[in-house]
Amino acid sequence: MLQAFLSDARLLELAARYHTPLYIFDEATIRARCQELKSCITYPNHRIRYACKALTLQAVLRVVLDEGLWIDASSINEVHRALRAGFNPSEIYYTGEGATKEVYRDLIDRRILINCTSIDQIRLLGSLKTAAPLRCSIRVNPGEGHGETNKTNTGGPSSKHGIYLDQVEEARKVAASHGITLIGVHSHIGSGTDLAHWLRIKDKTLAIARGFPDLEFVNLGGGLPVRYHPDDERMPLQEWGAALSDSMAQFSKELGRDIRLLIEPGRFVVAECGLLVAEVQSVKSTPDYNFVIVNTGHNHNIRPAMYGSYHPIRFIPADGRPAGETKPHVVAGYLCESGDVFTVKADGTLLPRDFPTVAVGDVMVMSHVGAYSHAMKSEYNSMNLPASLMITRDGTVTVVERRGNLNDIMRRELEAYGEGRVSM
Image 1 (tube, rainbow, N blue to C red):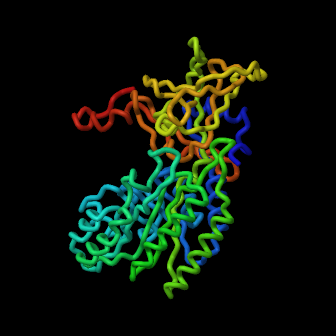
Image 2 (tube, helix red, strand yellow):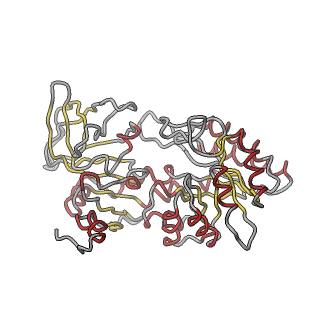
Image 3 (cartoon, one colour):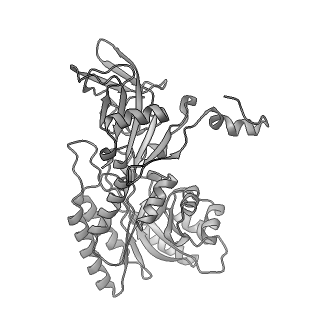
């Protein structure tokens, strides 16, 4: 969908006008993913929440809001970003591994539902004095997980997330001792979860939820797979939605009341909406590898360096020359880090890809960078942050975040010393 408005000539034009590196996001792709999700769940009492940690740009949050999704937030600042985008407090759900009294007080005062991820968090919540009775949900670790690596696995004995399944009864007792009503059970086992894992964890979560007399909802998390590599498989969404809908209908009938189903995809909603555009600054070789150095790095997309993730990459010749001889190249970034490489295996080993002749000044286009790329960007090596563009549904280009500069990088430390602003 993104490519409909972005010919090679248009990409070269945008790179020249807005400078590289450059993020480009596509409104139509975000809307299409939202609509896919909404169409495949037929169980009436459900709500889709966008896990906004994947991409928290205001422009993206407003598209998600317009599509009728609610928000799953992982920090108090994500909560406030959602509020600024126009979400009501009742549409925001907070799940954070860290918590303080100040954060919980803010959430309670705004009547934002808290999802406790540890027994200590339940105690923390119970220590706050409130006029209204306290209500929350709990995140459970169902004893198994799924993810591309341990870094994306959010369930099982090796995961820090949630209250382990053999401690759920203790969690219930601690909540009762503080007068807290547990109204929901949440589980999420990791990114790229296939249908079989989803359905197994769904059954485990429902089995745990049966023990909660005040249950109002079950949250089955996110982790829907995205097709980054040509060999990757997408989730069969219609089959997935039908299975969830049937299970929830049976579950509500069994309990004799209407239990709400929540899901909270993040990556699925935005991964395919984004491009990272950069310029080739050097082409060089060693006895073992040919390297292409581009003016971006893991400071703008950390997924390959952190997870060994695959992203489609291609190059646009700046001079319009026809494709030349194809040779294997390692595509690497401009940071002073050996691990600043985009073409790697899951274990970090270099993995060259075949490209037609690449020259200095050519433009690299890396796709599927909508999730956990912009959101995890940094100013490492004191590099300026890229501008972000949004391609609207009619093809209009809008700047939704300006390019960073040295003033941005130094502002907080200069203000701390009373030195005001630095000149460029």
